[in-house]
Length: 347
Picture 1 (cartoon, rainbow, N blue to C red):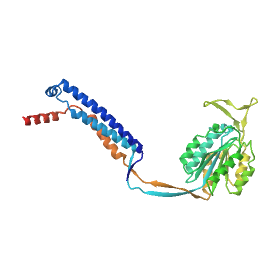
Picture 2 (picture 1 turned 135 degrees about the vertical axis):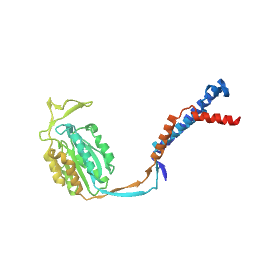
Picture 3 (picture 1 turned 180 degrees about the vertical axis):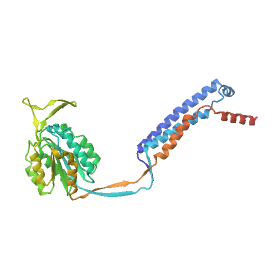
Picture 4 (picture 1 turned 60 degrees about the vertical axis):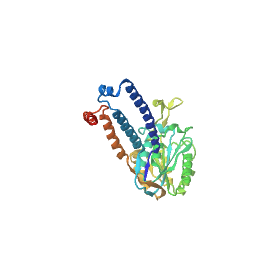
């Protein structure tokens, strides 16, 4: 069975027809002009090495090479198609990420939020077939990515996390955990887990009730505390340049993480707690905790085996281009000798 991976590229083959028409127009006009200026005998005397066929041959070689390159871009595939359905088992891992302004504090390098993103990306590298979902929160919360087994999509969304994705600002962990539970329920997961990234400054809501629901349903909330005990000011950026720090009534605001609050969330829900001292090991700590969970079938993927044939086209294309490059429009010495021999035989 044969097919092209990018079959739409084959439409470019039509451009060769346009080039061919332009060349034929040029070729015929040039030959007409030569016939007006020279008789056949004078043309041979004036341009003894001139060859109509060499010019035509060079164009044909270029046209074939161009067509071959277009087919290479379309990536021809061949071979017996074998569909394999591979089942995968894993858990549902819900990342709940604080994107309030306090996460811009730089007591954790490069910042609390950037460190959270680094940990998530490292953790994804350690996950197997676990599905991943992302909930972002500040004064409000929203599902950035529903549960998916597509880890590359999760990586793309994580890289694009910024504090300006939610307005209003604030920190409502209760609403974030409620929305996270809705996302888990919609994915029909039986063995989910939540990984909460925050500095723990909870200014809105009371998460005790929702945490008790997580506990009753045996859904652990693993908490990763961002920030050191002494805290740090919240920088203000304008077009990527730091212009100062957040102030209230003229005083610089210092954001201090609530480590006890985050530790309590993990303890009550049966999760693990990671503070600033263990951030370097956070991906492995969370990965180990997830590995000890029960797994379920998260989905199946269909694979089709094809063998790419582009090299079988690319190598002849290069050969044609080399021949075209060294092919001159004038007749070679042996061709003139052959022509003279044929003419003498006619006499």
